[in-house]
Length: 292
Image (cartoon, rainbow, N blue to C red; front, side, top):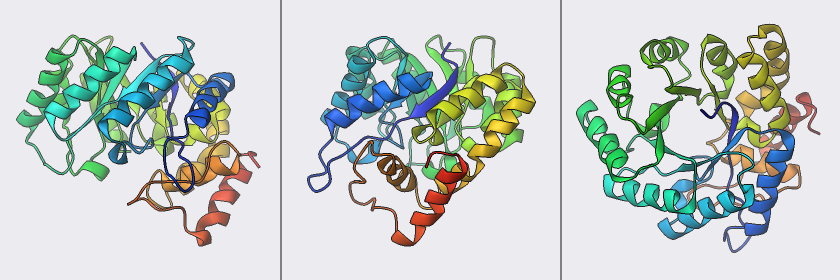
């Protein structure tokens, strides 16, 4: 089971051309491994999956897998609102050697709970790779209910869920129905510490893009049941948890990572760079975490 701090990695792009910056991507993978990140999600929401075409999507996953070279597990973001496209992306990730796939609920379509069940069942049956469900209704307008998660957890290669509602009541419901060996991850940095202390296995994190060492240490403390240490580290990160969402993710986090000198501050439309009047807010959060 993959546990700990799992970064939802940004996809670096060149200013001007907005093509993927492959050299920066490779450096980011190495940096995260050096900083103690336990696993990487390639091409999730934070990785701008919505603006990468299928070929680019597969190439980024392959590049991350190759650069990690087995040092940490790689999870590929392969969700789509078309079941056929999700199968295509998931197969590409399996072919590239990813360790698991993360599949967001189909966005915009608003499927029923039965539709969600059949969507994930079809992908799991089509591609023999470990698959992690991803529930983030604030972005998808689709909420996968605990009863549906429980049904899906009976499928052998559906091995976990990223629950990103930020609702600790919902988190407890998921933990209560999760069978043994079924991984449960937070997808909300602001409540991840509490979720892990409740029994979750880690955090699939935006904040880890900027503060990987601290996020790894916080998750490790929470997993060990050291609530006092986890709270102390989390307090240092709290401004980042909040202000990396001052505009839609990944706008603020890309700006923050660019301030560390690791990538260009470049996003594809319809995403736009962070508004100048927000610079100091994010910069102050980075200072509070002692990153600047």
